[in-house]
Image (tube, rainbow, N blue to C red; front, side, top):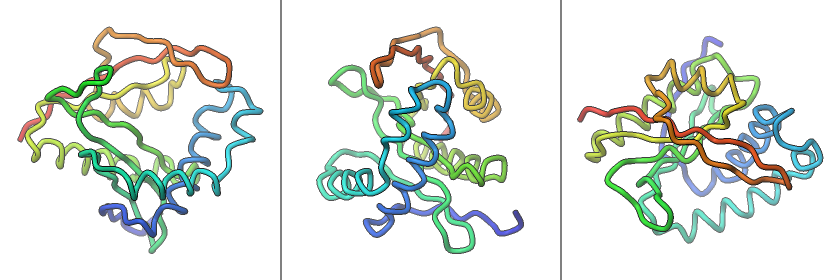
Length: 175
């Protein structure tokens, strides 16, 4: 890919494209981890409806970013205050980061990650945390290359009738 990646704030008009990125990202990233029937049942249309509803109602401090290449949305990330149960902490959490499968290893994920980290640091967050499936080796390598490390916390994640293990990763931020 020679076209530059541009990261910008997500707009409501991006909901359909973000839904496509998210659904395709789930199907690729979680193939073999999450039951196939669940991944097949995911719908871009339903996800786009949920995205539009969430986007219109979200009054949190969540920041939604999209990555564009040649005028098309090819990635999405979202971060905000770290959730600890129902409370938030002084740290930030990367809630989601997805790139279209055909855009993996092209700089899209890195551009989103870098922008999220820069913005979170500028907002005064001292660290950025995230949760990643223990068995998602590709994602874990990506996050480790981006400066994240597991902090020793592991929790179960229940999806589609199966229980998977998630690891918490952390990366310090400098403002």
